[in-house]
Image 1 (spheres, rainbow, N blue to C red):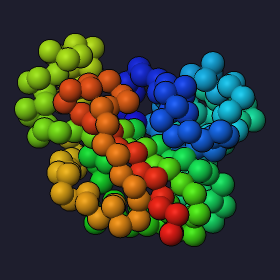
Image 2 (image 1 turned 135 degrees about the vertical axis):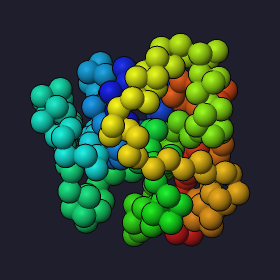
Image 3 (image 1 turned 45 degrees about the vertical axis):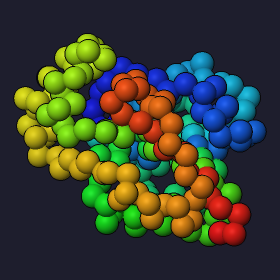
Amino acid sequence: MMFRYNYFLNIDQIQNLTKIKQLKILDFGCGHGVWSQKDIKKKYVRKIILYDKSKKFINILKKKYNQKKISVNFDFQKILKKKNYNLVIMSSVIQYINIKKFKKLIEALSKNKKELIIIIADIPKLPRPFEFILLPFFNLKRFFFVFKMIFNKDYKKIDYYLHKRDQLNFLKKKFDVAYLENIHDLKHIRYSLILKLKKSN
């Protein structure tokens, strides 16, 4: 996640959704980290690679996750060369990437992979102003978090993209695509995608 928001993804839910017996996760856009220490210790979690575009998170993550299962790697080209992941998670990321770059990213992540699942979580359904108006009705804590971010200079500089479902139809060529309620919070105004690489690829 781009900014500090106190939320952990549920690893049991992710394992149930993906049916992957041994999870090797690439957390793309990890921010401050969304994994609890309890979840990391689970036997079916083999490895979690943490990657983010912003280098300022490196030291924060190394202090927070000082254990063998966690790899803090902010060199995306090295990650692509190793390909040692079977699940990619992008939580609250897609809205900050334009569709052209997103297509290239998906292609790079899935290239030369026989098996891969990508979970794209926290995808906005509505333009940012409309979502902001509705936020207090669905998550007051997140409303106050976003309200603070409005006055953040860095946040104002960031581009924001609302991807409609028809823009994401290109994914169906390479993946089996499932739409589901958000695995993050905001289940009614955001949604998640599960992309499972087709066997022919």
